[in-house]
Length: 443
Image (cartoon, rainbow, N blue to C red; front, top):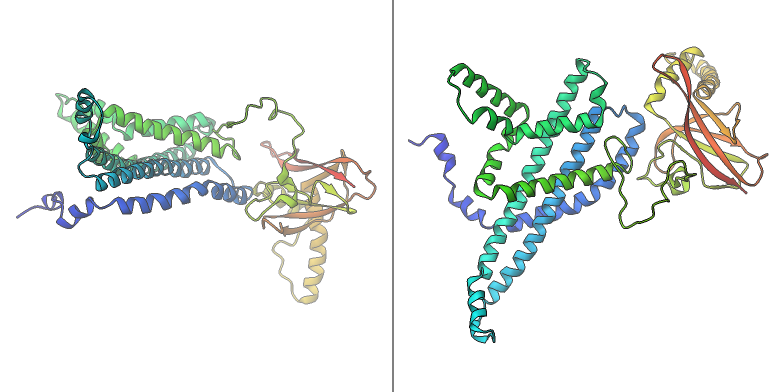
């Protein structure tokens, strides 16, 4: 009777037939995935803008953001390579179908030496077979590397979580430390530690058992058991240098693309690059830059207001509408203000009349609290007694606060709106911090 292992080692006939006919499934999956992942970065950026103000974007969430990005870039690069190889494969296969005999040397005017060289080279069928192998490996390698990097970031998040819980220190919040942990985890996963510990047996049985248990622990802790055998199958049947360079190229390119794309809106561990632009003195520090997304006329449902916005660059009306996005980090100052001014946070009205009286009192207190939180200045002149309301931005639906500033007495020229935020520092003292500067022109 055959054991379970022998049962699964033998490939069923139906699966053997399917193995040679998977190119349609590959093209379908790779093509749809490439299309989806190409536009996914814009969706993630839009989602980031919408949730970032309201959450504590901790180290764990930052690493998770990197992990999601880099895995999608690995799949994108791998599947694009698969589609390109498949396109060439189909072209060669079509030629082989039309002319199965290959090159008709009788119809060539080449000399005998040239014909001999051509005959010694790989035939179209040989190239089709080789491209079939490459296409299958490119598809499989993309999936394996995606699983590999997913496990790297999951393990990296777990390591950071443990270090945070034991109070390891502020060093864990440095970008280089996160990269170092990820590299160490990846090094363990590819089996470097195993080769060091298990390459030679010790004369002491206890040492061998310890090595074995450490290897097993690392294999499961880093989740490398999910893909180790499959990687070894590819490695043991291909040129290790070609495989190593291919893997390094895909991972490096994916990391660079990830850092560049996230760097457009998040600076932790990222960088900015210029493509097809040789201007050196345009994006400089301290220049009077105008962000077009500070103006409501440029906001869409996919582009949230990150901090503050006003209707447009030119203001013709008497009142300037100012929208300020609500951030989670305002909560401590808001709670302080609600308690300070005795806001009816947990009060339950007894009847309708009591409700109306309570609401009127709450409205007055609310404006005191928000004016304690925000300081609004125009050309360095503080705007007093502003009336605030909670609302959502009409286009992006971002949660926030809105007020209207009377600018009737301002001259028809350029002005600068400045919004400051009061916050509690590490010593639990209230400090004033610059939040946003926006230029506008009154007509």
